[in-house]
Length: 125
Length: 382
Image (cartoon, each protein chain N blue to C red):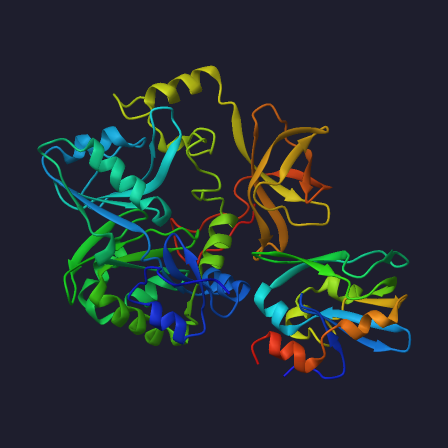
């Protein structure tokens, strides 16, 4: 079961909203599917994006995945701990392995994201 | 999830599934790509010992009074004159010098040989050999579907192999095995071939077994090697292990549009041999100057260069990456690339998904193989 305090995307990102800011990461499933993650590239703080934009890259030894922003907004923080220690994504994807914080410009976008139950269903129960 | 229906299996497939392997389609087989994780598996082979199921490889036995001369004419390296048990790494080329496959050829008897080819090329190689086999004097016996192949690789591989009950009386033979030599011995269900070969850059062995013997041997190695830290190793780590020591992999550094001279395995091409398929083209290429060369690169900018990424020198496209990944041992992104011969050592750029990332040439290999002397000898990084 995935944490119930946040929303999910079909592409296996999660977003945990506090006030007007959302913390974004990828799910444990996504990290596990990629395998040992060895490289993470994140966007510049201050840049703005619209929902669904590819804003970063996550690479394992074998594969490359894009990080899609689940909501529109401005990047207000990136997790430097993860760029320095990408293995955090494998060991703590829902916590210390968060990737960016985004100031939401269209909070209504959250309504269309998956809740924990729906995401679990996507994973096959 | 990958669709695995209709794929061939090995005698170990059920074991892999039961031990948490992620199974993928590979060259028509359902094979384990990883178990615990590529980094842990890679480290297990560099530091201890790992077990690889490489049963998908092709095994074609060749027998007869004309076998030696015939094989010698099919491949780039010299197979004639070798001692019993000698193993030769070679390319098999087309007339134009392009590589059909790279392979091992074992001398198992005065007139008996074993050709071991890549799984992805097995059908092509079997058909090529069949097409060229003389009407008399050579018999081909393709035993790929009946033969299991287990690689035991790592500094503790000799210790582990010696613990197999079936080899208990053969410790002297194991100890006497030089790199690229083999012996045969009776196994439970038929002949076993034990060779000191492998594709990891570590001291190691490969065991060719009748299918019926594979599971018992694998389980015995896994059980008896527990105190040595033995681990099953998937295809992902097999790739990173060979990559660090710069061993060519077909479909990457080798292919039908790449000659062995370009790929840097000219040492396995004996241009002075009387004749072999492709010799005229390869002699001409050598005389005219080999147009491309394989180079080793360290990515100094941020990114991991992958296969097919373009390589730029002073803004000009000069070639492409053949293999690239994050080196688990050296902990940095490295790449092999096939580029124009004139490109000098130094700074280059790699186009990584539309972004120019700095790279610079570095010495071959990234990591020195530890295959010749003491398996526990210290390693010299490049």
